[in-house]
Every structure is written in C-alpha cells, then in structure tokens.
Image 1 (cartoon, rainbow, N blue to C red):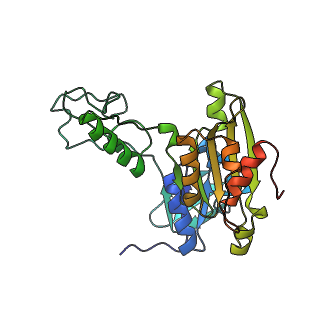
Image 2: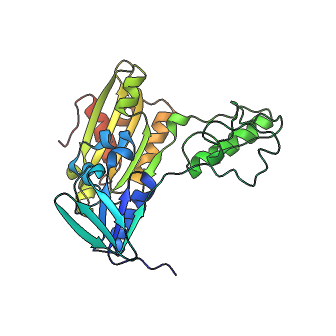
Image 3: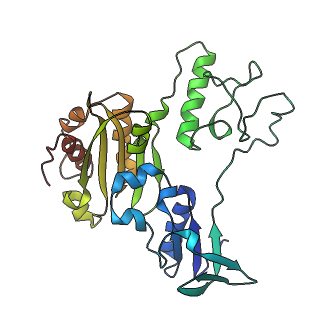
Length: 290
C-alpha cells in the first residue's frame, strides 16, 4: 500500500505531476508545492489570465523554480532558498515522458525511429516497414489515451480502404487539478505563429449561477475565434468540471463552428456550460451577465 508522506514537496513543471500535486494537497494538508504553470502549456496560462493560473496549487513558495536549490539527504528533504529554508518528508520531481518502444521488436524489424525515439509513421500511420502500423504514445503527438483511440480507429479505417482521419487541432487536453484545466485548439501564441488574427471572448465562473451554487467560482472560459471568419480555433477553461465542458468545445472546433453558432445555441439554465455560451457571446462583446 502506498503511504503519502505528511509533508511532501512536489516540484512540477508539467501537467502530469501537476495532477499528482493536486492529489497530494487533498490528502496531505501540509504538502508544499513549487510550480511553474507556464510549463504546463502556454494555452492554459493564456486562457485564464487569472491569479489562480500562476498559483494553481496553493503553495508556500513563489516562482521561479530556478531560485531554489533542493538538497536530498538521507531521510527528509532540505529545501533552501535565499530567504528561508524548510525540511520536508519527501521530494517528488517530474522529468517528463518518452515513448516506451523497448521490447516491441521495432529496431529488429528495421522500423525507423525519429530523433526522440518515437516510431516514424506516414499519414496512414504506416511505419517504414510496409504493413506495420503504429499509433498512440509510440508516435509523435500528445500522449493522451483519447488521441491514441482515435488514431487506432483511423488506422484500421485506412487499412480497410476507408477515409480515416484525425484532426489534431480538435484533441482536448485536460489537467486534473482543482480547479481543473482543459483546452482544445490553438492558444493565442499558436495563432500568432500561424499568422492568424483572432478575437477573444472571456467569461468568469464568478458570474455563472451554477458555479456560484456549487461554491466553485474560480477561473473562467476563454474563446478564440478567427477575426475574419468567426470560426472557433481555440477554447480554454479553468474551473469546475472543465474536463466535461471541453467536449462541447472540441465539437465546435471539429465542425468549424463559429463563435456566433455557439452563442446562439440554447444552453440550459442554471448550468456550467452557460459559461461557454457567454464566452462565445463575449467574442462580439455581447456577453449578457457581465
């Protein structure tokens, strides 16, 4: 059985360890977390423009991580800073993830790997060896179960001569912290790199009736729409049930819906999805409840 230390320190720079840090905070009230939200994904920080985005997990130390030195000794962890120091029971640090392709016989079969050790595939998910296909964490792209599932379906459809396809811009990402973070499509930074001008609409959960009833009013919804066509190119959420709310956003991106399409769609009241509608209305500066 895993025993959570009473005073763990979790140093995180990615979304996986961020979720673990949130769990530690729930079950170990004396936990200390050092975080750098910018490393989770630029879209999340851009999406929220909230103080909570820079203090996602309530911790005792300010940014940046580079200001600290962690000294691991036999037993507790001494965490020092120019201004103070403390001793904790453990230190957890995320080092990132990489594809696990060992033992698959890929190299022995002559399957080409890229510079990061991922299996190289073409647009049909076929490897350098004809008739051998790869999907999911073994190939480039976000390491997400739902991404792998869609690639598996598309790969089999293509094998059968059907029109399989995965729209990578419509794959949602979720960080299971508290509050939750969810994102689909482009961030403002992504749009700028593509030379795409966007209009932005935002709506806070503080102004959403259901969020107020739940007592979870932190965060909000942010919609990015193409300035010329009004097509939704990105949607980002920080707040209650963001992992559920992002499904509507993924559908909007997949179907190339406009912000007006979502804004004119009737949303039941009182519900959290009303915040998505209001953010879409805000793209045209027409939000009703702020």
